[in-house]
Image (cartoon, rainbow, N blue to C red; front, side):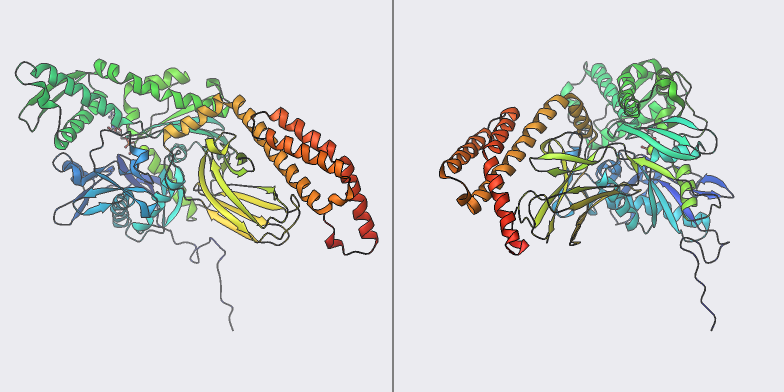
Length: 635
Ligand code: ADP
Ligand code: MG
């Protein structure tokens, strides 16, 4: 009988068959799909020749759903059913998006799906995941149509700052769209691949990505064609939209000023959803026009009959938005500091995102890095182009060694230990994928269960960090305090998703959790968590010392109390009373905030129990020698 042939894992059974793999840039403003054809990464166009698909989804009265330009065209006429920037709400709760005052939608929070927001549309409540899935479906149809076959898989890009919940939401959206996700890839990393930085030089590069809704800055180091992300930073609530909003406010001011003469000002106050959308669209067009022109004329008619006709000069526009440009330099500086680099260490700066076309942005970046940024690739296509190259490599179409892309964790990951202290397992900016293990032990004699709280943040106390998950390890064999060995392993995969395992080494009992936080951290929260950790190192050290002293005191009081209960017959009544007095003294000290005093109390108690300890040891030895079962002898 002939043996059945089985191909090696990862190898196609038909080696010459080219698998269809695409890269998808699921953007806040625009989405794209690209693929590698004849060795070249190319963006796929729709039947009208559009490469960019506006990330806009409209729910029509007849139940139809339209995506892209057609939906965008109706944005001002039907704002409540035409969803833009759904990416901003991915994996988010109402609390996370509370500060976005100019979002017109009506939100609901869904307790069942981890507090994620839902939007009221005429087609019912829609989650950001469902809305994003419509965009991905449209790109899948486009790709299968132009490639003439079914897709094997897709690499989908996400901002470097996306946390677990946001990454998970992106994967869910892809699954809903019927896509096989090969990997999630950070957008800046994809851009570096598109520029082929892996092929030419060694060196350190900065990826500056200012899109419609997010700003990301990443520092990548190249060594022998392998990328390592040294640091990432950004602002998930800063992008081209904010420049539009500045122009929008300017238009409103202008109109109020000029029409004060003939209309009461309050007529403008409650500007309807449609007018808001219309003006924001006009503002965006003016902004894009000003990239190549000296002035932009903004003309439109509001629903109250007032005609808007204003002219904005490029100089005025730069003044209006200078603070937004400057705002991007703060995360940039932080990333440089995290990576421990000087401007002189940077070999090149890559510009990504449509908003980096604005001359003032290019100038600011050039001023800061003292070199002209790389702009020869189309800034709104580079991410999709790079994702396609990565997808092509992942399905095995590339014959050379697959490129490795390493990303980093934005915040440290750790767990809670006694006294509410954080033990960091994976430090911030560790390259991904990463796995780290550490051994822990029990606090009490006979302890058979352990509660493990997983936290994220830079501070020393659990209360100052963010809790990601809590799980229990049960079935630990009863042992003396400190004898059990529990190995806790943290693993973050290439997509940035965390799983934690706790395993008791002798019995092999194990507990496991995959961390899917209920909702994501906002950029402000991350910034606050980072800056407060820098500012409170001294206070944190004190708090840690105090907590450690208390834990230590508690453990000793516990041990001595148990020993007295078992063996107080070994010492005199006076000695016993002396020990009890020290216990009481130490007990009262633990409630005060003085680590030094508590430690002194511990010393005093240790001293008072010296004779007792000696007596117990002698008794144990006597017991053992008299042929008693060893298990009966505790301590
Ligand atoms: P995202 O990654 O958020 O989907 P993109 O990279 O597609 O965003 O960038 C979209 C942003 O780029 C929008 O704010 C858009 O107005 C802006 N943009 C596109 N072209 C220009 C231009 N010529 N000048 C200024 N801004 C532009
Ligand atoms: Mg983008």
